[in-house]
Every structure is written in C-alpha cells, then in structure tokens.
Amino acid sequence: MYKVREFELARPFIPTGDQPQAIEKLADGVNRGLKEQTLLGVTGSGKTFTIANVIEKTNRPTLVLAHNKTLAAQLCTELRSYFPHNAVEFFISYYDYYQPEAY
Image (cartoon, rainbow, N blue to C red):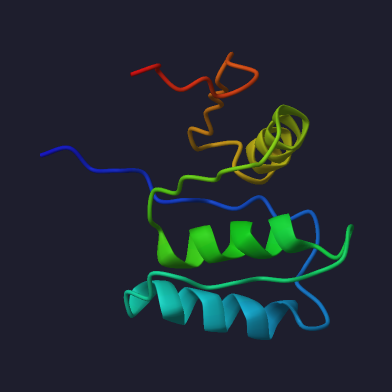
C-alpha cells in the first residue's frame, strides 16, 4: 500500500498575533468539512504562512489558486520554502484571456 508523506512545515518563525487562533479555526473548519472559509489580512500579514500551518495541521493535499501569474509564482516559491520535503507544483494557463466559442 502506498503511503503519502505527511506535510512537514519548515518553520522559519513561529505563529504570532492572531495567527495561532486563525490556524486552529481554519484547520477545524477543514476537518469538519466546511466548504468555504475566508482568511483576511493586509499585505505582509502572514496569510501564506498561516495557510501553510493549516496544510500541515490537516495533512491534506491542497490546491492553491491565484488571480494572476505573478502572485501564483510568488505563492509557489513561498510554499516550496515552507515545504522543502514535499511536492509543491506550479501550473499556469498560457491563455491571456478567455475567448468563448462562437455558436
């Protein structure tokens, strides 16, 4: 039987401020099967690090979506640094805009 490697977070620092509470609440929501949750924070407030902690705590494969290619690349780089012993992959679409089919 194939065993999936557990997510192992390389912590460059420890969660501070509101992060520990956010990690607990978000992880609890994931484990209870909540389909939607929101994490709000200003730029540089540690949202990616908070989510990395949730990924480790819940130990579930995770799909991270970003609204542009620059942010997607930044998130991938950060998550790879947080999870150096786990697979963190990057996929972007090469379509610059959506063009629906003509009927």
